[in-house]
Amino acid sequence: MRKTIVTSILFGLLLASFLIGGFFFLNRPELIIVDAVPPDEFPDNGFAHGTFESLLKRYVDSFGNVDYGKWHGNASDRSRLRQYLAAVSRFSPDNSTERFAKRSDALAYWIYGYNAYVIYSVLEHWPLESVTAVKAPIEAVTGLGFFYRQRFLFGEEPLSLYAVEHQKILAKFEDPRIHFALNCASESCPVLRPELPTGDELEGMLIQSTRDFVNNSRNVFVDHDKKKIVLSTIFKWYRNDFINDLRRRGLPSERGVVDYVSEEATPELKIDLDIAKHYEVVFEDYDWSLNNSSSMAH
Image 1 (cartoon, rainbow, N blue to C red):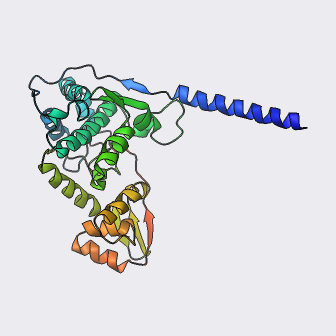
Image 2 (cartoon, rainbow, N blue to C red):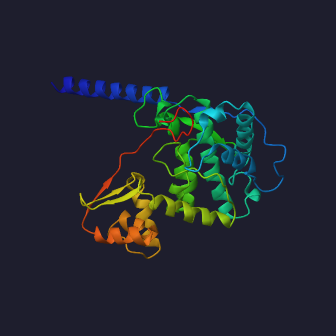
Image 3 (cartoon, one colour):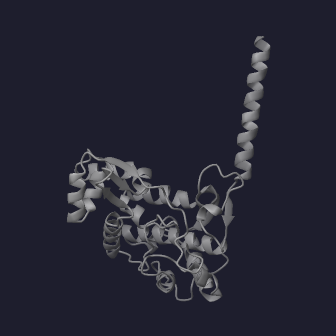
C-alpha cells in the first residue's frame, strides 16, 4: 500500500515537472531585434526623442488614439519608428549614464521607450483588434504573449514590457503617476500624448496626465443612484502603489485608492467623493480593444 502511494506521488511529481517544463519551453522568450540604425541627427550627447514625437504628432488624434492603419501603410514612417527604437536599443540609463543628466531624463527614456515598443509591436502584428490577440503558445494569463513573452532591447538588455514597467520604472522611481503615462494600446489605458517632455518639464506632464485620467468619468465615476464609486481597474491592479504614495507624503489613506483619487480630483468630483464616503467601491472591467482611430476602430 505504502509503495503504491509513493509511486503515485512520484508519478504526480514527474507529470507536474513535465507540464511545467513544457509550459516554459513553449512560452520561452521571443527576442525581437529592430533592424535599423539611429537617426542621422541623433546627438552624440543626451538622448533625443524628437523622431518619435514627430510621429506621434502625425498619428495620434485629440483623444489620444492612434491611426495604426495609416501608420502601417506609410513605410517611411515605420522606418523612422525603427530608427528611434534603434537608439532605444543601443543606449539606456543603465549602459550610457552620461547621456541622462537628470533622473527625469532617465524616467522619460523608460516611459517613451515602452510606449514606442508597444506601438511597434502593434504595427508588426497589424491588422490587430487588441494586444491580447498576440498570443503565447500557452496563454495562461491575459496579455502573456504581448507583455511578458516578447523581449525588446533597451540599452542592449533584452526586457519584456512587464519587466520595463515593474523593474526599471516602478521599482526605481516609486511614482504611481507613471501609471497614467504608460500606454498599452488599449481603450482603458491612459491616453497617449504626442508631446514628449524631458528634464524638468516631465513633471508637468506627469501632473497633467494624472489629473486628466482621474477627472475623466470613464475612469472615476460616482453613481449616486446605485451608491457606488466606479473606478478604473488600474486603481485595483496597482492599489498598493497609490496607497504607499499617500503614506510617503503623509496624506490620509483610510479610504485606500479613493483618497488618492480625491487628492487629484476637481472640486466638483471631490464633493461627489465626499458625499460618497459610505458607497461601495467597484472597478470597471478593463477594455482591451485597441486604442485605434483608423477605419478599423470600433
